[in-house]
Amino acid sequence: MNRKEFLITCGAVFAGGTILSSLLQGCSTIKIVPGNLSGSDLFVPLESFEIKKESTETSGNVIIVRNEKLSYPICIYRLDDNNYSALLMKCTHQGTELQVFGKKLQCPAHGSEFDKHGSVTNGPASSHLRVFPVIIENKQLKISLK
Image 1 (cartoon, one colour):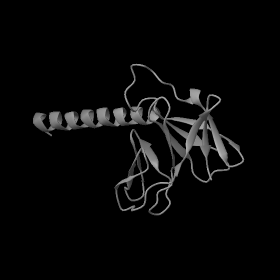
Image 2 (cartoon, helix red, strand yellow):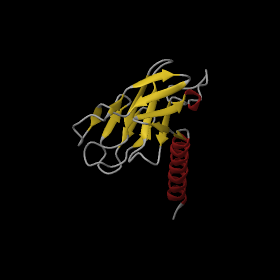
Image 3 (spheres, rainbow, N blue to C red):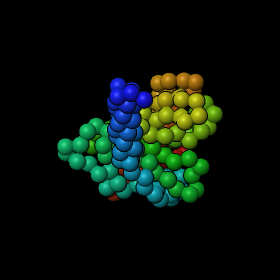
């Protein structure tokens, strides 16, 4: 290997490592919290969202809620101070559990993508995600699973 090839290889490895590191850091900012089921409602404390004044639009504005009685987790996006979007993390194409990447949910099986409102933005899925109504009650988010 000559010097030019060596420098190109080292540059590619460095760039790849930098990109991978930033992707892994991006994934680690999504908080997973337990939800409390009561009848057909799921409750999540509002304090689960760690809102920072200097935060970006995606930082602190999304959480994943898990409960052992639910087949799939629920992704909750904080749209503003009083509005939230709760989405079932089940791909409408073939039922694979979705992954959250900032303002979108993506299916690892076939690449379908959905926005933070549950709308399909990239197929092969053709149906929107199941969206649950959310209200704020006693400093908690109340998500109706009916």
